[in-house]
Image 1 (spheres, rainbow, N blue to C red):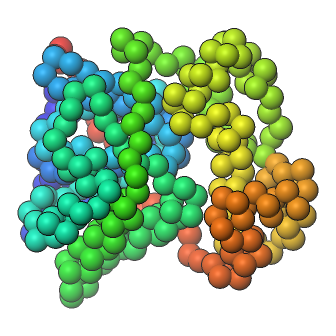
Image 2 (cartoon, rainbow, N blue to C red; image 1 turned 90 degrees about the vertical axis):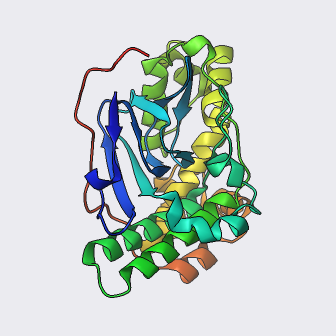
Length: 308
């Protein structure tokens, strides 16, 4: 098992770095000597955590955020096309802020004592993901350019990110029973939905594509995503709308058509119900917000896993 050190990814004189990861297949079993905040931004993957002789296996979806503490062992697999950002830092970096962070809803989710078999995390909605993406991009640029005061600025951005994450209520995903693998067909179905939310889907067809009966599919889909298929598709469509509202000049009728909605009226109602603001007001408020773009990536080298 590989033991990663902060010095492999960041500066010796400042214990904070951003490590974007494009997951093409898997990340082998490993641990590290730093805190890692994982922000899952695209795709899906299977994540396995080890505690003594026990292991807990979960499916990760976009928007999922969680932490890996020093010396925790974990791995990823079935992550074709997945993308996530790792914020890595030493506990001493935020030691003075820990007392106040303890007052937030999800402090124990990220920094508390680990219970084998249970790993709560939080899930960001589309607007929260956009805000976090922009903060990660800003943090990346500050660390890269290292202008005078960059350490203070970087820490400030990290704390802003932690405030958003720790104020969210935690959710507890279903552990994959008896470590049984999730069907690749099911993960491919979810990936297709994420890549093409504007397509028209039926639960029957989705279940058939996943090689499952309808009841089994809907139950497993909900256990992995926390949502029914129709709710998940609607969430992705609304996310696509928000992404296009930042820069697109398309009319609401065109956005509705391109994002899978029956008409503009339904789009407006669904958008306001989800975000508490109409698409038009959202566009006026956030038009031309700079998109977040990754500047570099990292993937651990393949190595043989040790038995545990």
